[in-house]
Figure 1 (cartoon, rainbow, N blue to C red):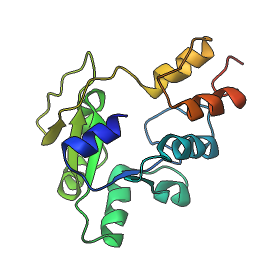
Figure 2 (tube, rainbow, N blue to C red):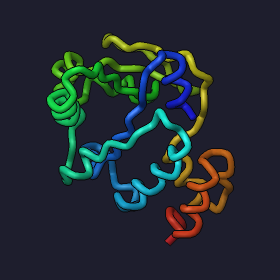
Figure 3 (tube, one colour):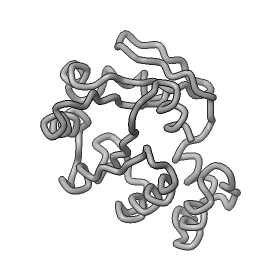
Figure 4 (cartoon, helix red, strand yellow):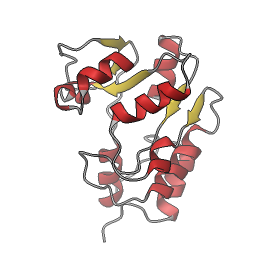
Length: 170
């Protein structure tokens, strides 16, 4: 898993996964927050360094990263927060809500992805981890088209998706 590679490479104590209730700039995947949360719980259950923080789910509605990080910093004064993003997201940083304020609150860690460059004027810590050409969009597409997702997601997540018929052609 990419997150474990980043945690190990940069010697981070923990990785917190913060599932969103409603992303501000994304179209809904069609999967409810409960299913996304359950898949995440299944995916990380064997890693004692991984935690889920449901701050955005509890707030409901649209969450901007800057607001979430502000609340986290208020609750956890002694924690230095990092935000892990893929190289495909790096190019969109100039369009993020209150990006300059966010840069004062958190350090960004960039993870390479095939076909993307990590070129930006913003300070990014590049994590030296193996490149993986996987995305949630690709997983959803493969399920919809009847292709296998074996080895792209943990087996327990694969089972969850198929058992509940998530992402299938409707």
